[in-house]
Amino acid sequence: MTASLSSTGRAPTEARADRDPIPVTTVRTRTARRENRVPRWVFKLVSPVALVALWQLLSSTGVLSDDILASPATVLGTGVGLWEEGRLQEAILTSVQRVGAGLAIGVVAAVVLATLSGLFRRGEDIIDAPMQMLRTVPVIGLIPLLIIWFGIGEQPKIVLISLAVTFPLYMNIYGGIRNVDAGLVEAAKTLGLGWFAQVRHVILPAAMPNALVGLRYSLGSAWLALVFGETINATAGIGYEMNMAREFLQTDVIVVCLVLYALLGLVADFVVRLLERVVLAWRPAFSGA
Image (cartoon, rainbow, N blue to C red):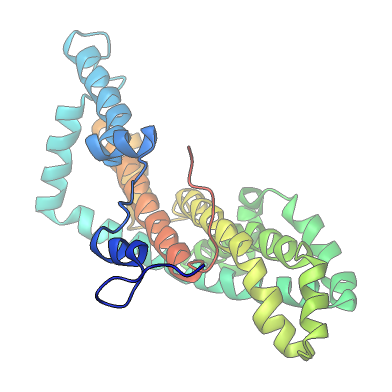
């Protein structure tokens, strides 16, 4: 039994399909509708703004005196004054240079040691045991030895930051390499990839998420080590300004320095998060409900 054809030579059902396309219904989840109404950055600002408002309220009502903790308005005025004097710019530049130098040394050391230890069993036997022992030693406790070995110049500060960066980054890279799915490695072998190709295309990309998490953690450790490092006969830097303010009980200057540390840490973390989006663009991840 043959189907009847229209004047165009096509079946009536086909002609109707060309004239009347099937409408596509887009389903919007409750979360998507809520995010379209209120941007996420608004929610991120609620708690910091509320905390500062509560702080200002307690200071204005006299619950918090300036001797205990300066008010946000006083801190802001002090920060503007220090910026106009040029002291903040000099302190930020000095501290960033120290962190940058220590971070570069620590990252290179951690990547080399973790790669050798993670890829080779003999490397693990030689490297991993000393690293596990040394990472349990408080880095801050090494300050007296660093002063004896390197003096009171810039070297002990940079070495202290390097050590604070090396151990957490080493642990994450090593763990990332050793936690690569063995099935992926076997599949690479089946496809005929050589050892170097397996490392380049399978093992290192799979370990990259752990490495970036370790880098974020290491950046926080670097700024923490800087605070202690700048107590070693420092003549400039954020820690130096904080120590001088402590001598004169200037809580407003101390808070300004703490805010600087926090802002610099947030900027560094934001840079790493951008790096994650670029490097890990191939890896879809859960972003929250």
